[in-house]
Image 1 (spheres, rainbow, N blue to C red):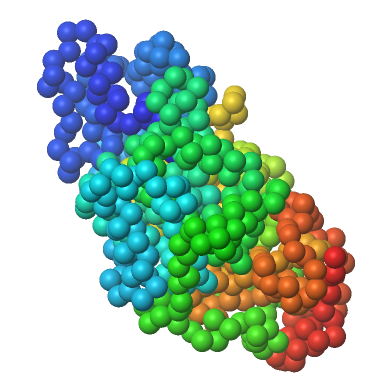
Image 2 (image 1 turned 180 degrees about the horizontal axis):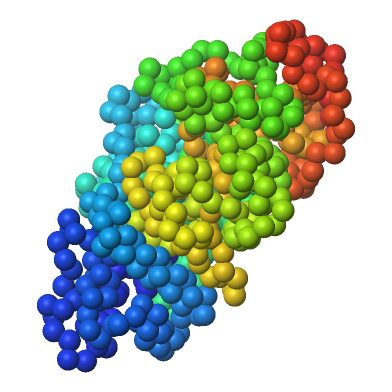
Length: 568
């Protein structure tokens, strides 16, 4: 994952030292940290210089250099947005309305637990052996002998053990690449791994695309050559086309790094095409040419709730007392009450982007009615990220939002990071306070001629985007007529306990069949082509409504008599 260099504060100081004539070195030295927010020190010193009288004049002068460097108009416009946003923060600090000490660029991370199960210890030993090579002949072994396949159900510690393995590898001087299918999962890795020049965390698409682009620029055969350990998490979402590119890039590496595939075969599959990667791993294991370690539940795992681990066998009673009304506004009111009672965030998970957008709007109607009114009336709203289907936004302090673009990993401005809006500087520039206590200055960006704010509301998201995350309270909504295997499995396993999972509307048995288990004949063996876009056109019925007095009876009735069975 690459971040624009022109958005870094050090670039501002470097530019001034090179291009401003008769400038003393002391004129652009950063001020003490207790007087200026981090990541704005060089800019603050420069804006006080006599040669820079107005912020816009400074932006125009830098644009000339960026244009010569070949940067596109979108990146130049985003640079202007960034400088204007920082200037507003510096003004708030100068007027003593903001405390510079609150800003920090330090990335927090959570050290992995050191209580390992026997299976986790096998993973650690295999990776240590594969990355500790003393004989050059050991590097010439076939590719499949330098590959490890790590599987296991939700909460078995897959992420914990690969984080520990990555840290141990860097202690030995190894260079590590962590690849994920989504930016949100990559963001979680960045928060849990310490900053290091030896660790690169990117999306799978970005890491391998960069490699192939560099090949076409007549560089050495890809940046992957420079890694000793490659960890590919949630590999089940990698489609055939991407896997083909990955095979080409990996095949060119000599010596070959040690590669670890991590994931749960019963979770979400690729949207397009067959799962060639999964099939290839199974074939290699069957032929005895691939090591596979399946992690089991243990005392230090994320979830040790036995009822949670066997929820598929208890589907009739699983949601007793935890069914939410199908009406979105009523469901949101229940979610708000649960947040007040428990002090934890409630997140709705849907199958479609449209369903998540509808739930986000319902949450705004309950908590921020003025924002909902403006969005529905198209009254003075700002534009959200079109790639994330954010639509129109109206932002206020206290709202929970999620970032959708990667601009600076050191500031935490990465796709998938979320938090609460702390301060609004303008209607499209604000300070985001993350769960880790970091403050991020969020400002508009320009991409392909479109200017927008790179955020979406974070009260609801899709199950596919949530795969790999751990959430507090979860509400599941299956908003398609035809269910796909795996979504319920992924959505439910995002919580730590079964009591933290809630269900909207009626329960359909076919929603709860996992991927790869033929328990209903040939039913739904692959995701539908409209998995993330198909609308639920089922008309509401009396059976869909929640009766507060008899939740258990309703769950049984819906499961036994009013269930919709879909067969291939």
